[in-house]
Image (spheres, rainbow, N blue to C red):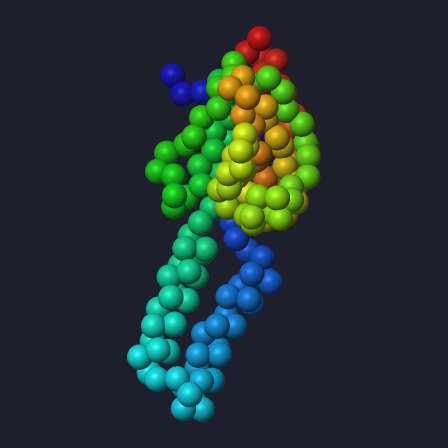
Length: 157
């Protein structure tokens, strides 16, 4: 029996500043080609690298689901299936801020004791677990995510 989805959020890398920053390198490569300071081979290499990064960022997405039994996280294209955090492993949770400096940016990040899943912004929910680890989930709607986790954990008790 499939468990019911009570909350779902999908986030993508859509920050204009990120895309503007990403475009700077290929523009500089093309300017270098026009001025004769870069070879065609170097420009093709830089444009190919830009295309790869743009493709990765364009297809990347973080899907968060709260179901009856667990919190499910999937960061595509890196995860082929959902990562599951069963509610019987959850010892606490709270809406909290996110520091990209602390974790080294956005994406799937690890620090001692914490795994963070973020795409943008500085808000989300931190889930404390029985294994003395925590999972931080970035969200554009942290209060809704927090309420869904709270309701789901109360149902499992």
